[in-house]
Image (cartoon, rainbow, N blue to C red; front, side, top):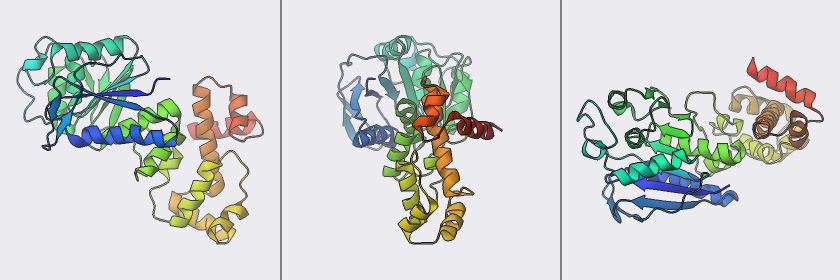
Length: 317
């Protein structure tokens, strides 16, 4: 799988819209999943909304279908200019991109690639014709305008991000980090996304509209250092037998005390239930990529598939 991310920079780009996702993909390299990051613009020096000029290449790299193409948002003083937008007129009505850039967005998606946007970047995808008939979102202050300008788009409100047929959009600013973590989880599994989030001190990873994808992140929004240490061990060795006595000894407390503080910190999970949850999530990731239920069960530490089926059934109730 190609690990290239190309950011398309527009004048007035918001630094956090760019830096947040770039940090996620850059950090993934620290855990053995290196990404090549490219920054493309229609000019070599791209001014940011916060005043810091950014250097970009003006020639497009050759894109593979596995590459990601991301449009960070930009400062939008006013999107309302006309009642309708077409690709030909997009550059003159609020999208600071020319027809060649919009064509590159379309071409990458048509070739089977994934395109993503943060905040106002959704407007670029709309101008390229990629939002028609698809679910999408953007910053809450410009959702109405996005819906008006692109009436065939299905604008979803009050979510952090959406994904529909390799078109991924986010609400913007900090939610660009959530979007990037979602993409990393889809490509490398939730465990890798969890490692990246923890390294960035983003413990409480949020999902767009469904329950959070990984217990490694969902149950980390606490300040108990001892419980974090136990979770670190379970995260790293969830497929192995981990007796409660071993976990309690790690932090120097009794088994009963560990169970009590762990359950309180994680919102109701005992260490065993936490480990089982990780096993099930990892197994589901393997199954979604073609692994049989029996093989996935053994891979994550179950003796056979019966317990995995039982726990999966419990999760769906």
